[in-house]
Length: 310
Image 1 (tube, helix red, strand yellow):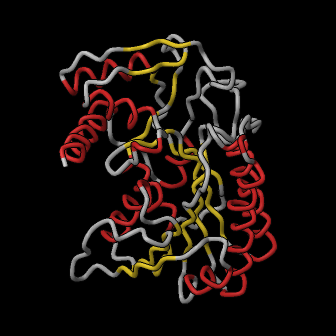
Image 2 (spheres, rainbow, N blue to C red; image 1 turned 90 degrees about the horizontal axis):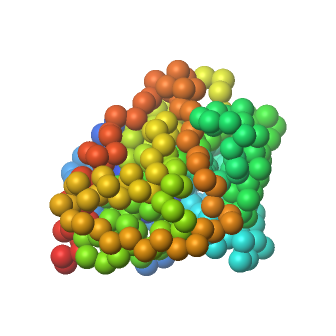
């Protein structure tokens, strides 16, 4: 198949691109201007690298020429800062996605796979683990926008026959994670630990999240690309809750370093525990996470150590 990946040069997008190339797909990777290819592609790997702005109807429409499937991985905001400017969040993410969907209708593209947020669309859990039927009550603009995009994808599926698969990914981590964006506890904590810097922890370290290794996320996308079942929304998660204190203990074991921790006043918007049920993805997509937290952190640490040494 010919697949366009919007945001294919980012942390998750590059892992997905590498995984899809193993299946022999033809890829067109759409990235922001001045973002170079993340590696040299081998002979036999079919990759077209294009740059543009997701807000540009012309550039998005061109990127859709001749493709079978769209992978939508772009987000211009982060969960913790999205409330600072919700209008920007809506304009650059929701409106841009609607323009993309209209272009897909015009170009007769039949499928879209969207990365949603398993960490923000549900809000405070009413029960654990959280399944896809759990109420959605996002507490940040990022989650509201992700959820709105989900709803529009399903509307376009019903109106125009564009098959929509929505993957609600929990807390991904792994190689190529951008540590300078301060997104993701694993990336931020590990980079500081490797540089012998102390960690700032909001609260007592009991905040619990569901961490998933990026290669397992990429495998879920590879499965979703060829999925032709009736379900649309899937949790992509490890299904295992890990507290910040437990995560740091794993990092100490992997790095062999004692990590200094500064415990700060807890933040009101932090959900104490969020763990997602991934049963539906296992049943429908034939997918399951295969990388333990210990192995994933070890792989990430090895990559990050080399990156920091450059």
